[in-house]
Length: 75
Image (cartoon, rainbow, N blue to C red; front, side, top):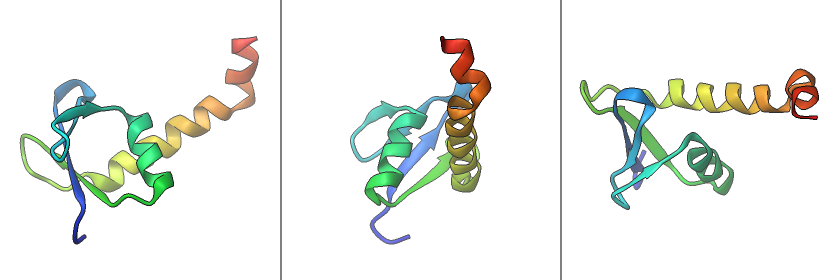
């Protein structure tokens, strides 16, 4: 993708935005998706493109947080 922000994923789920030189969370990436910001996620060790895997993880975690079981556990 042209003009995409590069996110590097390090050990223990650490995500680093190479454009802003800051650590980001999956919630930050979810917000970027909602804003329409283009980004790619690369494994810091191998350089492999893991964007699809990270996007799937974002969707999974958002669905878990919205599930009726997690809602009743919060009450």
